[in-house]
Structures are given as structure tokens and as C-alpha cells.
Length: 273
Image (cartoon, rainbow, N blue to C red):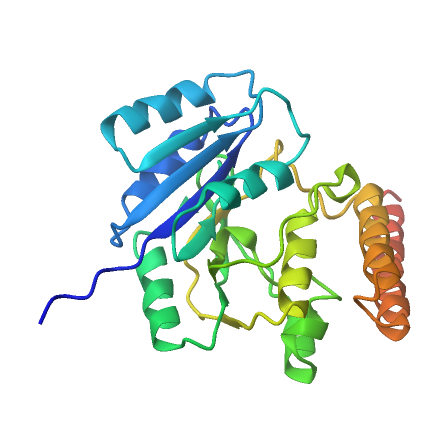
């Protein structure tokens, strides 16, 4: 009896001026205990030496592929879509160019998905690290945990993004793509999860944190600024106008979003006195 071949996993890394951390990210990806991978790094017209670092890794390991863009797209949506278009794997995983995977990340998820063919999207918690690699305390998302007990992931995802894109593994083929809209930069992954779940994909989570998610001053996502709340309103409006969500979900999600903004403003005003 011939041994079963391990399915190919395509790993997509959007890169923009990621010289500082890309080597550590690639080291963690290439050190995975699951070896049958292809690494697709899609550069978004970087101006630093990040691409040279990727080329050096590619020269030593044929699994690493670099795709260059002549135009900067202003966010990771287009680079991730280019990665999807070039992916040959049965499964796809994403990682940003400053995050770090634990060595068994892919194998843990692959084993789960192979044992559970009814699950299409598998994610996990993440441990937070700073720019020096020091682990920071993680805040429990009690509200989202409550929502997931009260409603399906398809509806709960409307109220908060409980899926960290860097922990995610998905089955091919994907029916949805990242929406390439500058007004969704930093929440394009949230929109991607909503569309996948509404297109019928099923999601599950493992309890173990499988990655180190880096939060630092240069991070593209700032979910606590006024601008981020306006982006969420815009995203919800798009979903409602495209009849992706009901009027009830649209109203309630916006009320909760506005309440979070008001609470943040009050907290800032209180702390300034």
C-alpha cells in the first residue's frame, strides 16, 4: 500500500517595507513540521530591502517564491488576491510579514481539517508579541465569545472579527476574494471572513494559540481610531446594500460600533483629567 501524500499548503505573505521582520516570519514558516508547502510572497512595491531578504531565502529553498508588483496597492487586499490566484495548494494559509508561527501550526490545522472534511475554515487564538518579540498579555474577547454561544459564526462575525487572518487555514477552492477598496484597508480581512461564511463555508477553531501576532507602532491596523469606526460603518453599509446582511443586523451592529466609539471617547476624556 502506497503512503498517502501530504496535501500541498499554499502560504501567502503580503509584503510592504517589511525588512525588519520578514526574515523571522520566513524562518517560522520554513521551520514548520509540515514540509509540503509553497510560500508565495507578494511584494507591494516596497522601497526597502525586504525583497532582497526574500530572494536570499528563495535561493536556498525552492519553496519560496517572490512576486513583484510595480504598483503599490495601498494595502494587503490585492497582494493576497494575487497570492490566491497563483496558489496551487489544496489548502491556503495567510501570514503577515511581521508575525511568527509556532512550528506545529500547519500540521495541527491540517490534521484537524483532514479529520473533519465538513470544516472549511480553521483558525486559532494568537499570543501577542511586541516589536522586540516579548509576549504581551492577551485580552479575552468576552463579548465575541458570548455571541458565538448565542448565534452562528455566520451572524456573529458581523459584530466583531473573531478570526485572526494569520491563524487561518482554508480549503480550496475559495469562492470569495479580498475586496480591493482603500476604504476597507485594515478591515479587508474581516470582510473576507464575512463573505466566506455567507457563501456557505463552515468555520471552527482550535483552542491552542498557534501563532505570535505582532503589535507594534508600524502595524497597519489600528482598530481603535475614529477612522476605523467609520470604516466599519462603510463595510456594514456595503453588506446591507448588497443584501448580505439584514436591516436588523445592520442597525444593531452599527449601534454596538457607535457604543464602542463613545465608550472610548469617554475613557480618553476621563483619563485626560
